[in-house]
Image (tube, rainbow, N blue to C red; front, side):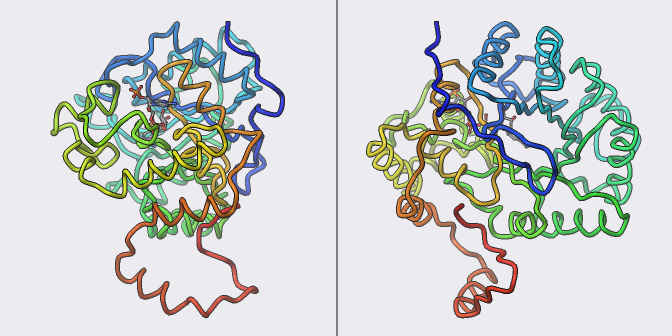
Length: 373
Ligand SMILES: NC(=O)c1ccc[n+]([C@@H]2O[C@H](COP(=O)([O-])OP(=O)(O)OC[C@H]3O[C@@H](n4cnc5c(N)ncnc54)[C@H](OP(=O)(O)O)[C@@H]3O)[C@@H](O)[C@H]2O)c1
């Protein structure tokens, strides 16, 4: 029997950017649901276990669920769909899914952000999710092969015919984010409501440009991999090569290293990784919280973030991660300490622009820089 959850620990609900949609400040990511296809890693959840995770998330007050057509090649959406069907209270939940990546390599049009693929992909997602609308339909990654006008018009058509409530973006650079805003403006359609991007204490690249666009335009940033795939949990040390879980799976085979899960040979030599973890541990000890809870809380206290997308492979991980949501906060000084130990190296011309603008703060001008709430 899982422990009862006190009211003051339950999630809070935030508006998602300038949209009228309110979501729990923790969103449940479903990348670990289902073991089919290429997005799967060891320890993926069965349908039965995933439903337990979803039920427990709801006990914490969670109303926001993120999936994608490509997760476990449709199985993740199916698992969320069978849960929604059994729950029979669709209107209580905010369901986000995605389109862009390849669902069938043998079909030249089962990929990308063109009209043909999006129009078919939404039907497939709705069928798997057992619903007749998606709350946030996200473009999973920039597509160099299609004009933005075609993509945005198609996405807006889905809003007009009631299959989608809001649109979202994911994995874009700064100029691409600005382009999405400018083209929506030119077409006189609403801008995307969200940007889903990797964001954690070891990856703050989005702050340099894309998140600044979001801040100015009122677009909510939804961090993915908030624990850097499990690295920011305190369960690893630099002296022992991990063998368990997702990080262990990567550590046991250098070729599995990627932008989101770097090879262990790089991680263990990276002083910043261990300094960040040590700082999270020290701050967590002062609050009776874990490294993971501090890493999540840092994101929850960033001004551009309405909700953090967590990954939880087990019910214990879920409970721990939900414990970041409410009932405590880090002080301004602790936030500054984390900002400093995780500070990204500024590339040119960011270094120059930041330096020469220190004395140019104008309270009448919009504040671009991402900061703390
Ligand atoms: N838009 C995109 O391109 C994109 C990309 C990636 C993810 N996402 C979304 O973001 C969600 C979260 O991403 P993520 O799964 O990479 O998040 P994450 O929080 O960085 O990593 C989750 C993994 O960390 C470990 N973990 C989590 N909580 C833990 C705890 N309290 N203690 C110890 N270990 C813990 C678990 O792996 P082990 O138990 O195996 O160690 C878990 O599967 C996904 O489900 C998906 O919805 C989106």
